[in-house]
Image (cartoon, rainbow, N blue to C red; front, side, top):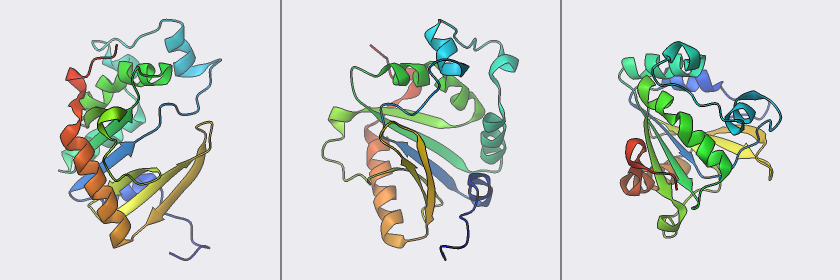
Length: 177
């Protein structure tokens, strides 16, 4: 893709998926506002109530639900260090919302990923051919995305994801200690 053409928006990439969208997350923390917002509220003890769907449903979940309804399988795998970071505890506490929307989620302890060839960045892979790399700075702040339609990159991502997925623990069985 020429450098003067911006990459497609994530929503366009997901809308264009016909079979699958997989997401691999490999960081133990991502930048969050420690003073306000959902992470800060969680740190103060706020937890989402699964029975009160109206209080936690958000546009991302609408997008997931619409995509899954079209027949696209959305899977997310997270490689995490143990004991888990505070941020991972936060993620785990509300991942049930992703599952309710139709996303499948698994967790893989990092020590069980040592022999997996992993790409250097988190990514989304759409229909096994389009990669959206998620770049981050050292402190977890987003440094933007990059789209690649490169068969070698797509193959690496697909193989890495499937290996992580096969070893991963389904969300409803992954216990945070």
